Image (cartoon, rainbow, N blue to C red; front, side, top):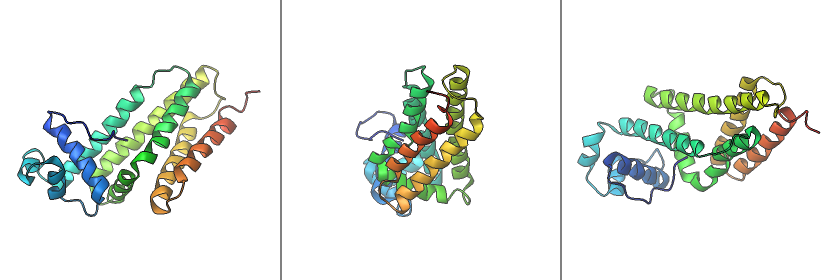
Length: 199
């Protein structure tokens, strides 16, 4: 997801993104206003509108920001071992979210607006395609390296995405330990489907 926005940066866009992060965690999507973002930013609403015409434009930029942070965190993984890389990727998708529950709620609220807001829909679609691409790529590399069983990488990636998406929704709507359960379930699925030929 995104890092905790405690660090101060000289880039106004970065500072506004961090302020948006904090405001979303504090108020959620439904109660989010440009004024509340400006309060977190420490400047007037005019300072926000100087960079972003509308709240929706700002939130579309925020979705880009979150995806960019996720991409950065994935690229920091320094391993060529497919099994370990898949484990770390699943950790990023599930375990890391446990410390960002308020933001997870806000993101689910924003996702629920995707059918009505094309800019949101495009970002969530891009995010889904990117994550699925990452999963599919590491699975295909594992098959090529002989670490994983011969499977359809696209199908397995989609199944893992279903586990991730379902867990995120259950974590928000029903609370509890859905993310931890999903992480264990993902491991069990990977073992059963990708590592079935291992002794």
